[in-house]
Amino acid sequence: MRKYLFIILLITALPLSAAVKHGGEKGVVDTDYFRSIIGNTPDGVHLVDVRSESEFDTWHVPGAMQINVYVLYDGSCEEFLSKLPADGEVIFYCTSGGQAADAYYGLLDTCGLSEEKMKRFYFLDALLDCSGEKCTVKDIEY
Image (cartoon, rainbow, N blue to C red; front, side, top):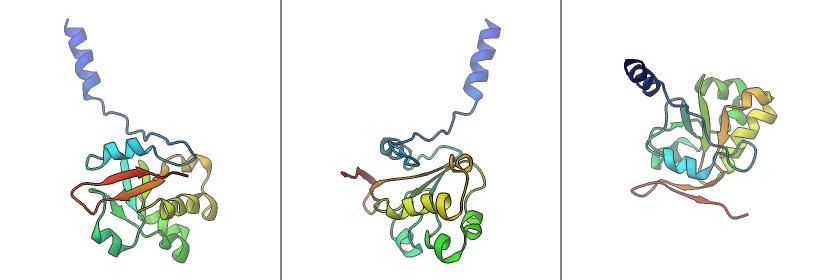
């Protein structure tokens, strides 16, 4: 009995995987997963708002950090990468997915990150609004 109790305690003490759930296309995070982590981001998952600082100040997802996507294009890959968390998974977001996709594909195409290094980066391809009491995420109909 002690052996089983020890195993149960050991399993419950292990951290849960922070694996981000993939959406339908390369680099896209699942919108239901993104909804589920708003306000409760798991350890090892970092939300990065790639809009301007003034847009971020107006509203943002709780717990997110802000890095303007234009740092990547007007500055340099090194500058943009230096602002990102060194480990864990990173989800880029904006209001409608365009700038978030720019950040993701900028790392892939402009900066030339390998497929292996890109495995920790994702972007939200959805409509996001946190200007009210709570954030809403709506799928984009293509």
